[in-house]
Image 1 (cartoon, rainbow, N blue to C red):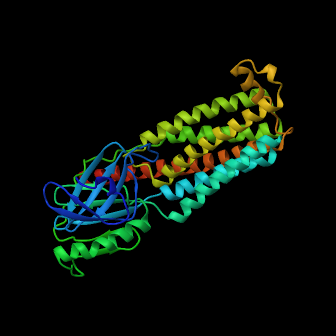
Image 2 (cartoon, helix red, strand yellow):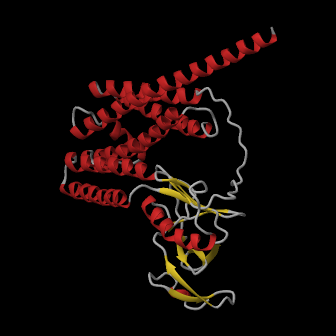
Image 3 (tube, one colour):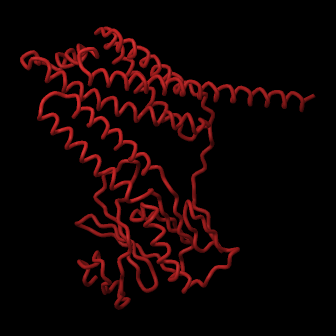
Length: 371
């Protein structure tokens, strides 16, 4: 391939591939990693390039490149689906800004003020960049034989722009669609040709019933920890702080188990969301615990910090009445635990009642049929 080092330029380039002669490519907007989950570390950067009769998808690692061509005559649909990654990251970054600001305002020492203000400013920059780039999405291109994800189109604004650029080229080859053949969804995405659209191959999974026992255990432990943290806020003792730590470890395990069990089950969407929110609360709680550990190391004598147990004991000795930072952390943890635990238990109880009523109705229907 000639001029391969100029393939990623914004201007059009000339290439020769597989003896097809010169092909003129133009870089399309968008670039992103090939993800495998919510958080993915990937060294592969994906981009799209517009050719004379096809779209070229390039996956580059810096050391190697993989190419895939999608000819305009073979493209059946380009599908975009909006995701929650944009909202989730906005919430996480906002919480990180709030936690860093608390550390900057309540911790003593000029060095800690500078450190946490720098962290707050860094998180703020990431938050503004995330908001400016707009909602996230997943984009797939579909042909008669495959359905391929386009990682470079990971923002809804960019995906719509690229689709509008590809529409004339595809219509030039396949012809313009009639209103009955085209389906346009302004909120979720745009399907281009739908004449002989082939459904993607999906593995059949049966939705199984889950009574939500693990979810109920997790929310009960969260609620109990919230009550204990509130009592500890009013009257601090090392025993209550230790029991609260054990409860935290217990509901962390239950939350992870609940997230695994709710996959491909009939757990309702509100319960799923509360479970994910509880996992986010756990992450924030551990970050706040780290802040408290740093505080305990600053306020305690360094010569007493011989082992990790000494550091943990010093953190347990921190009383909410002695520091506004500790009081704020305890109040935040208690409030979130009470809200998440209460709402989670109510939702799981409603799910169990609905399941019991449905089962009772099926039994009654079966009995009447036999009669």
